[in-house]
Amino acid sequence: MKNDMHGDRTNQSPTVRTSHRGAVLAALASACLMACGGTSNSEVKPDGSGQAGTTGSAGSTGSPGSAGSAAGGAGTSGAAGSGTAGSGAAGTTGAGGATGAAGSSASCPAHTAFTLAVHIVLDVTWPATAAAGMGTGKVHLWNRAKLNANGLALTGDTWSCGTILPEFALNFAGTVVTGGSKVSIDVPNSVWDAPMIPMFPNMGTLTGWDAGSKIEIMPTIALVGLTMADPSAAWPMSYTGIMARDDDSDGNPGFTAVPKQGGGYVAPPTALGLLGSAPSADKIYLASRTVVGLSGKLDSCTTQSGTANVTAFDSHVVGCHVMGGAACTAAQTDFVDQSRTAYMVVSGVFTSKQVADGATCADVRAALPM
Image (cartoon, rainbow, N blue to C red):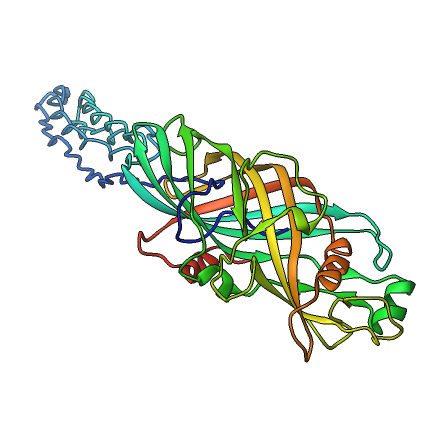
C-alpha cells in the first residue's frame, strides 16, 4: 500500500503532523575590567623612625560581569580592585565588581498558521506468495501539512507528496513464470504532484511551543484511489469490492504505479506462463487506505519527531495495463491483485520540519530526503 496523506482535494481524512517554530535570541555583553591603585607617601624623620604610610586609595569598583548566555547561566563577577600599599601600612583592598545579571531562558514563538514537511518511515514485513518469498523492508512516505493553531489545538489539511515501496524477491516458481528475479513497484512523484490528489483534514494537540513539548495527531483515515461509504469498514477481500476513483487524473482507476524493468527486475505477470511467456503488466492501478496517528515532541522551534502509529495499511490492484497491449481484463486484474504484496507494519517513526507556506511537494521531498 502507498502513502495516504495526499493531494489538493477535500472530503478525506489524513494523518497529519504538526509543527512549531521559533527562534532564540540571547544578548551577549562583554565586561570591561578596570582597577586603580593608591599612591605611596613615605617620610623619614631625622631620628630614623619611620612614619606609617598613608592608606592606599580604594581600588575602583570592578565593572559589572558580562550578561548570562542564552542558556541562562549566571554572569561573570567583575574583577576585584586593589589599592597600592603606602610605605608603611598596607593600602586598603578595593571592592569587587558587581555580579552580572543572569541570562534569560530560551523560548519559541507561538503560531496561528504554519506548514510542515513530514517524512514517515515504516518497518514492514510481508508473507510469501506463490511467486515470491517472505521479506522485510521499509516504506517511505512524504506529506505536506498546512496547519492552523487555536492556542494549543491544531487543525488543517494534509497532502501526500511521495511514496517509496521496498522491492521483493521472486522464488523459484516466480522466476520460472517471469524469467526474472525481483519486482519493484514505483509510484512516480508526478502522481502526488497531480492537482486533484485529495487532501485530508486532520487535528491534534500540543502541550506547548518550546522544544521538548509534546505533539499528538489523532489517527486519521486516508483513502487514495477509492471511496468508501464507511471508511472504517472491513477491507474488501477482492478488488471487486472497491469503488475506484481516478485520483491522479490520468484517465485510469485509482493511482498509477510503474514496475521497474531490466537489471533483474521484471514486470508482474497477468497470468501463468513459462519464462515470461504470460503477458506482463507495465502499469498497475492502485487504491489504498492508511490510518496513521503521530505521537512525538518538538526537537526545536522548527522540527519535530516521534512515533508513527499505523492501524491500517491496506491496498488493492484495481486495474492494470498489458505491456504492448491494452487495459487488463477483469481476469488479468484479479490475478495481479491476488499476487500483490500484503505489507504488515511492525513499527513506524516520523520526522517533520517547518517549510514555507507556499512549499510544493518537490520542496517537501527535498527538505526531508531519505
